[in-house]
Length: 162
Ligand SMILES: CC(C)(COP(=O)(O)OP(=O)(O)OC[C@H]1O[C@@H](n2cnc3c(N)ncnc32)[C@H](O)[C@@H]1OP(=O)(O)O)[C@@H](O)C(=O)NCCC(=O)NCCS
Image 1 (tube, rainbow, N blue to C red):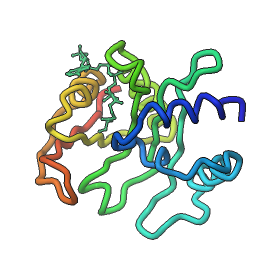
Image 2 (image 1 turned 90 degrees about the horizontal axis):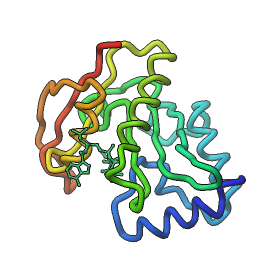
Image 3 (image 1 turned 90 degrees about the vertical axis):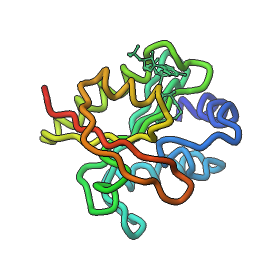
C-alpha cells in the first residue's frame, strides 16, 4: 500500500505504451483490490483460463517503484510457446541504467529458489534492450518463432547456468 502513489505515477508515465509484465494491465483504481488480485495470482486463486500461478515482484528505491517483474511458477503449452517464465518492465525514466538487468537477475534468483533449473525468457526480436538484458543474465538463444496477435518475431532464450 505504501507504493500506491508511486504506482499511479508509474502507470501514468507508461502512457499508451504496451505494459509489461501483464499485471501492469490490472485495473488499479481500487488499489487494495488490485493487490489482492496480484496475490491471488501468486497463490493460484481465481486464475483466468490458460494462466498458471505467478508471483509479481516490485523493484523499489525509497518510496519509488522503479520496475516490475512477474515469475510464472511453471510453464503450460501456451507460455512455453510464447511468454516464458519471466516478464518485466522498468519505469520509462529509469531505463538504460542497468536496472532491467538487475531486476531480471533478482527474478532468476527467485526462479532458482523455486527449483526451476531451465528458465525460459522470451522477447520480441526487435526489442534489443530486452534481448541484451537476457543475454547479460546468461540467456542463450534457443529458437525464434513467428509472433502472433501483433507481435513480430519472438526470440526464445534459455537460462540454465547457475
Ligand atoms: C527491456 C527493459 C526491461 C530493459 O531495461 P533497462 O533497465 O532499460 O535495461 P538495462 O539498462 O539493464 O540494459 C540492458 C541491456 O540493454 C542495452 N540497452 C539498454 N537500452 C537499450 C536500447 N534502447 N537499445 C538497445 N540496447 C539497449 C544495455 O546496453 C544493456 O546491454 P549490455 O548489458 O549488453 O550493455 C526496458 O527497456 C523496458 O522496460 N522496456 C519496456 C518493456 C519491455 O520491453 N519489457 C520486456 C518485454 S520482453
